[in-house]
Image 1 (cartoon, rainbow, N blue to C red):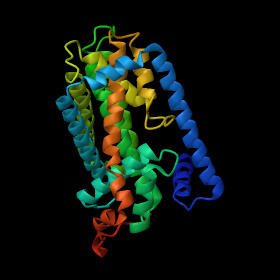
Image 2: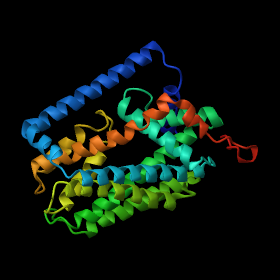
Image 3: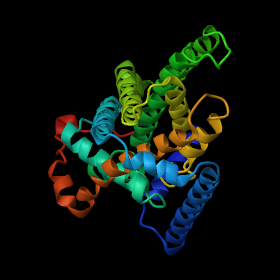
Image 4: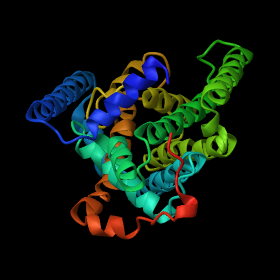
Amino acid sequence: MTKIEEAIVNEVEEEIKPKTLKAKLWDVTKLLLKICVTSVLLYFVFRKVNFSDVKYRLFHANYWWMLAALLSFFASMIASSWRLLSFFRSIDLKLDPRFNFRLYLLGLFYNFLLPGGIGGDGYKIYLLNKTYKLPAKKVFWAIMFDRLSGLWAIGLIIVALVFLIPQIDIHITIPLGIFVAGSAIYYFVAYRFFKEYTKYFFEAHAKALLVQGLQVLTIIFILFGQDFTAKYSPYLLSFLISALATIIPISVGGAGVRETVFTQLTKVFPMDKTLAVFLPGTFYLISLIVALSGIYYLLRPSRLEEGLPKMEKSDSVKLS
């Protein structure tokens, strides 16, 4: 194991240990910092865009299309948990899909509502490590590759959208060539140094495309709800770029970051500023509604554990 890998794994393993008072205070501090960053970003966004105009769009939206957007996002979460199963299967961890989805929703709740604590990924590592005595690093890298597959899918869709936006004066072969070369390097590194996780590599990345496609469809449905008739591609590209910007967890659930990115991109692409703030804000609200469903398993942990499959000896996970 490399020094970088060891450092990451040690950090994860420290996160799942019982918290000292100092660690708890640091978690609270991180949460307060994220709230501050979110507040500052939203303050600057609404200095440029009238909040009442954004509120008007929300209250006068076509709620049937909003419901379709909600269902599309929920479907993307089902597909996302399905994608994660592929990487779990790579380490011989065969979870029941229903249990995996319950755990995924609970993790989503942790990420959105408890951003200063262990987090959704940390909780998955903790529970699976505790239940199956599976090394934390194995689960960590399965989750890491799950995230990387999502970034790969975003990259592919961005390349496709670049071709549709005339404001981007670049030949399609350049971004396409960069993407193909990057994909080849990505797979080579994964196969060379993390071969175990490439057993279902292409299957998982096909699922990643489905996940991102459903989230793009969520944005399209939100636009339908606004009786939108202009070009979709600038808004969809901005949405994907803003998704990349939320990788660094500096705000609460990405709130403020997406809106800031959208607002800045209105200087580049022909987008309505009010709609450019409304879209990420509505996407955040939809994400929050879905994340809140995970609280059921926090309040009723027995319902989560009912689906926890018992591992038979023949299916035991190989420790490393």
